[in-house]
Length: 250
Image: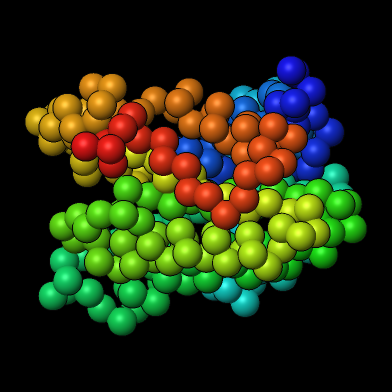
C-alpha cells in the first residue's frame, strides 16, 4: 500500500510554494520523498519554506505573471533535479472586483496567472513527462468553478476555465501516461481568503454550509494531493476533486 501512494524519487514543481496551500503541498511532497522545486515570486518566503522543510528541495524565485515566461520557468525548474514529472499549479490571484468594477488590466492579470500560465507551464513540461513515461498535472480549481460568488467574476471565469482545461489536458495527454486532474478546495485560511477569515461571522457561516461543519485545515489537502500524484490514481484523469467538506454538496 505504501508503494501505491508513493511519490518517492519523483521530481515535482510546485508553483505558489511560498504560502498557503501551495506551501503545504510542497512541504508534504518533500517529506514523502519527492524532490521538490518550490516556485514563487517572494524569495524570502521561499527561503523560509526551504529552511523549514525536510527532504530534497530547491527554492526558485520566479515571476509567473506572464504566460510567455512559462518555457523559461520550466527550463529553470529542471536544473536542480532534472525534468519535473509532477506539476502542481497552485499559484493564483483573486482581485475581488465587483462586476461593474472589473478592469481590463485586472481581468487580464487574473486570466493570465490563474488559467494561461498553468496551461503553458504544463505544455512546456509535457515532453519530459512523455520521455519518462509518466506524468502528473494537478491544477487548482475552486468553489467558484461551480458557483458564483460576489466580487468573483474574473476569478470565477478563470476557475471555471480550469475545470474545462483540465478535462482538455486529459484528452490531449493521458494517452502518453500523463494524467491531468484538479483540486477544488473549499474555504481554507490562506492569503487569498484572508478577507473571509477576517470576518469571524462569515467564516462561521461558510463552515456551517459544509456537510462536515468546519472550514478546511492545511492537513486536509495533503491526502488528495498525494493520491493524484501517486500510482494510486493511474486510472484517474480529467477530474475535478472537490476538497470542501461537502460545501458543494448542499
